[in-house]
Image 1 (cartoon, rainbow, N blue to C red):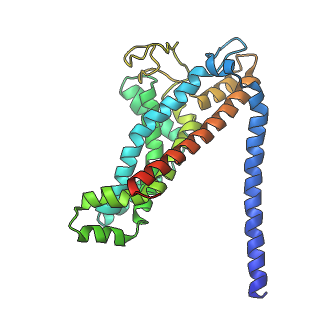
Image 2: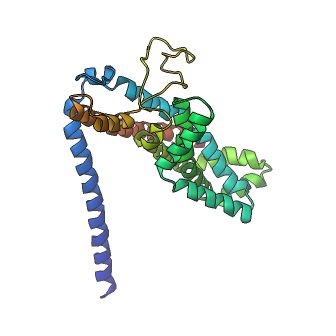
Image 3: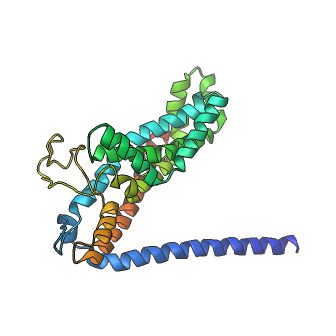
Length: 295
């Protein structure tokens, strides 16, 4: 086989793989959206769910999903980026650093159900909080932190060392170099890692079953006092997210319109993830242009 034939064969194989992947994604999204969008309406999005009657909505579950995502990323991003900076810039090669990196890789490979059981022990029973948004966010932080640490470390290491050396040669301190030179250059890759972590938060159910619970108290959206039991901002209340709600209605089977609710919820979940990713990338590009002074 000559080189041109081998090149054409390899090109055909990779094109076929790409077509297969795209076809699977398009087929999956089409199936979810076609079967779910016909059940989505303003009433469905703005009405609380019902455990026994037909016609319930997903208002509280949709809010809970975004709120748990916000709290989780508020904790995960600083810790993950900080851990990546330490591993890339401050950790000295040796047995301790290798052990830390091995622990991160093991933690990243743990099943979500194990993280959920750990969260149940630590953030529900040991703290005495019960099922709370904060407990769910902390469990998801444990779940996503290794991924963001590794992505941040790799993104920082991928920055050309000439940029760092030039900054240090001008007498700028190490931390100021990291803050003003390295992090802005690594920002797109770090943002991609944060978006991947956020997508896992949206779709996670197992860990939240044991930490955030399967119920949501009656919420008063006019009450924004975070210390009130009926306030949607209270982080010490139970919160059923959209992914957990899909699992719940299909396993409990208490409501007569189970299929309609689950299909509509799945479509809303997919659209929410897509919209969040697009907005995050758009905002990320704006921030990157601002901090790097590029057009």
